[in-house]
Structure formats: structure tokens, C-alpha cells
Image 1 (cartoon, rainbow over the protein chains, first blue to last red):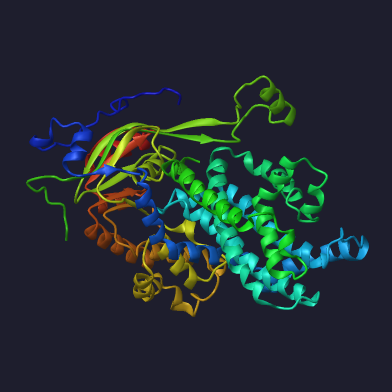
Image 2 (image 1 turned 90 degrees about the vertical axis):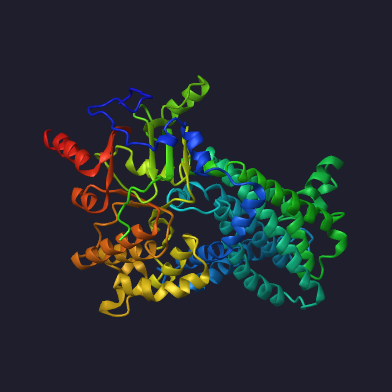
Amino acid sequence: MSTVSDTTHEGAVAVSTPPVTAADGGLSPAELAAKYGLSVSGARPSLPEYVRQLWGRRHFIVAYSIARLSAQYTKARLGQIWNVMTPLLNAAVYYLIFGVLLQTDHGIDNFIAYLVTGVFVFNFTQSTVLAGTRAISDNLGLIRALHFPRAALPISVTLIQLQQLLYSMIVLVSIVLMTGEVPQFSWFLLVPALVLQSVFNIGVALYVARLGSKVTDLAQLMPFLLRTWMYVSGVFYAIDKVVKHLPTAAGVLLDLNPAAVYIDLIRFALIDSFTSAQLPHHVWITAVAWAVVAGIGGFVFFWKAEEQYGRG
Amino acid sequence: MAEQQQGTERVPTVIVDDLHIVYRVHGAGSGKGSATAALSRIVQRKTSPNVREVHAVRGVSFVAYRGEAVGLIGSNGSGKSTMLRAIAGLLPPERGRVYTDGQPSLLGVNAALMNDLTGERNVILGGLAMGMSNSEIREKYQDIVDFSGINEKGDFISLPMRTYSSGMAARLRFSIAAAKQHDVLMIDEALATGDRAFQRRSEERIRELRAEAGTVFLVSHNNKSIRDTCDRVLWLEKGELWMDGPTEEVLEAYEEHTGGK
């Protein structure tokens, strides 16, 4: 079992190599491959070629994420209604605790809308990162059976969570309307904010997918990191009120936190009493910068280990 | 048709050069698995015994040529499927290289299909997973369903796959996988699925695929199907290549070896 042998000729029976054409006789395998134009199997494609392959598989990525999402509730009798029910129940729990039991509002107008927006938007990033960590290890069977750019998996993980967020948005918009907000022009800002957050999430998902494929313990560690991230992202409180008691550097860091940036942008879009004065400085620039840095950085980082993912 | 003709020049399609594959298996430790034991290992900076290395393929080299149908035989766990995955570029080699002409593909889409979805959606999903375009799938959809024979006993294709019998599911999986043409095709014991009628149909389909493909690899424990399809056989044992030669010669030695135990 443990004898490591480099020769192929060890064993009960001798290997009878098939005759090779005279012209090819003296060539090494590499020279033979070069002569007939064979390429190394499983080699990593160049970055532009990788992007091209990924674009070619866009239909697969979309179909795979839709299929995964709709397979989720097929055994429940209410089926797809759970896509809307889950965020609705989530919101109900928060309303019960913060609105009815504690009656805290931390001095924030329309606290319920404020809180639920924060929870839903952060949950998009949170569940994308969690699922991204397992994107490779959970799909090892697929990776070892079929050829496709592996980046398709973390991307489809993000798309699954994006669809879930869109269902949550239906709930969110109805809650916001019920709490007395009036639809207005600023609601259209939802679109760029969500696009930027999605690009950011794809980048982070790609990044943690590569880390998670090597360091399998990351999946255990991730929930704690994410909970810490949630508490510093101003989901339950207003960052600008806390910042006053903190050193300037900490305040700047809290303002640069991508999760807080995307949450605040969506609050600004939906909630009338959440004015631009409450937004951190240069918030759109920060939002774009995070999306670009995470998106491109995560993609390149993931691509660099492309040929390794099958090893597990 | 396409019976192998030893032409004037033999064109290699797959070159395997001193291939080694090592799996790393987590959680395979046989020692103490308790949390305190793990903690003391971290403190003492020992590597975890939970990670075991499995040297699945040990230095295999061969060249396969266009028009060849190569059978792979060997006992369970001898590294046949692992080697196919490495040829397909799905598993990175530890050492050595594999050169191929075009993109070799494994015949099989099982991993991409979802039991909770209808057969219909699985046909589309499986096709996309294999890299077919939407229009290609639309074109072949009816053929796939007809070939699988799923709808012979009523409209089963619109039911979730988890409601299928194991034979029906296997037939649909084979039909989806066999819908695409390949340069270098690798078949892993796909012949033994379904009832007798379906087996005959799938053997015929494999012969067609063989005719279209440049080179075919077939892994099987059924010596008869190897004799029917292959003209060259590689015998792997414990990750090493024990024998490589014409079908009859190798199979005789193999049968003698396995029968003599």
C-alpha cells in the first residue's frame, strides 16, 4: 500500500508498449504533445479567456441559481410562498422585540423601517459570504464531473441570495409603506445601490470561496466573523450617534465599512426621514470603490487557483 | 463503421506522462478524535492525523491515438475513475502531465441534476451544465426525452425526479449525458443502467458516440462490454499500470489473475 514506485513496469505482468511510428519513436511525451498540438489538460486559461468562458456559461449560471432556489421549498406544502414568508416572519420578530416589547427607537424616526432595512440588506451580504465559503466544498461532485469556469459557483451563490433579497424587498417595501412613507423619486436609488452591493458580494464570495476550499475550518469560523461585522454595521443603531463617543479614526473606519455604506444608501432611498445628513461623507464614491475593489480583486484571486479546485 | 484502421500515421490524442494523483482526505483519522486531543495537537504544533493522503495514481504513462477505444480494467479502488478525471482536467495532478487534443469530457451529468426539480427542467439544466447552448438544448430536447423512454408510461417528465424509480432516473441521466458530442469521450460504467431494452439502446448510442468521438475510454467491470467496444485495454492495479495491450491479451491475463484468487 505504501510503496511508492515511480516505474510503471513493476507488477505481475510486463507492460507491452504499443508500437510507435518510427518518426515519433525518439520523442519525449512533451515533444510528442507539441508536435501534434496537444495542450496540457486542466491548465488554467488566461484571464481574458477565463472571462470569455464565464460569459459563455451565463445561461448555466442563471439556470443553476434559479433551480437551486426553487428546489429549496419544493417539499413544503406552501412551496414558493416561503420565499416571502421567511423575511416577513423575520420582520415580525424584530417588530415584536424592538417595537412592542422594548419600545426602543434610539432616537431614530420610523425605527421599524430603519431596522428591517438594515436586517434585510445586511442579511444579503451575510448569507452570500456564508454560502460562498461552502461554494466549492459543497459542489465538489459537480467540479469533479463537469467542465465549466469554477467562478460560476460563487457567482450563482450570490445570485441565489440576490433573488432572496428581491423577495425580501417586496416585504420591505410593504412595511415601509405601512409605516407611512410615500413612494417618491429617491426610491429609484435602490437600483444602483443594490447593483453595487451585488458586485461587492460577488467579489467577497469569490474570495471566501477560494479560502474556504483550502481552509475547511473557515465555514465554522465564519458565523462569528459575520456576527461581529453585523454589530459594527449599524443594523440596530445609528452609527453617526455612536461615532461622537469614539476616536476619529474609529469613526472613519465605521463610515468606510462596506456593509454600513450599502445599508445606509438603501435607507436613504426608502425612508424619507433618513436624510443625506445622516449618510457618511462621499458615500457613493465609497460604495463604487468597494464594489470595484472587491469585484476585480476577488475575481483575480479566485482565478489564480482555478485548476486546483477539483482537489478538494 | 469507424472500425479502427491502422493508418499510415497514428495521431496521438491523449498523452499521459508519469501521472501521480494524491487525494487529501479530511476527517479520516483513526486516532483520538476528541476536542481536547485536537487542542493539544494545536498547542504542540503537530500536524493533524485527520488529514490522510491517498496516493491514488502512481506514475502512469501511456499514449492513446485517434480512433482508439481504450478499456480500463482493474479491481475496485485501483484508480480507474481517478485517472479519467485527471485526463479530463478535473483533478490536478500531483506530479506529471496530461496532454490532450481538445477538451476530454466524462460522460455523466449526475452532479448537476437536482432531484427536487422536474425531469423537464433537469434536461435543460444538465444540457447547460455540459456547455450546450439554449438553442441546442431546444433542438435536442425531444430526442432526449424520447430516448430516455420516460414518457412511455404517462407524462413523467413534468414530475420531480425524486418521484422516479432508480431505473428511470438512471435512464434520464444517461440520455442527457449522451446528447452531446465529444472529441475525447470517457465513459465510467454507464452501460449497466436501466432495463434490458434500454441497455441495448444505450449500447447502440455509445457506439454512435464512439464513431463521432476521436478517442473513447471505457471503465467497466463487465468484461463482455469491454470486449464488444474496445480494441486496447489498460489494466490498473493499486494506481499502477500493470498491463497495456490488445483487448484479448490483457483480459485473459486479468481473468486469470482474478479467477486464481
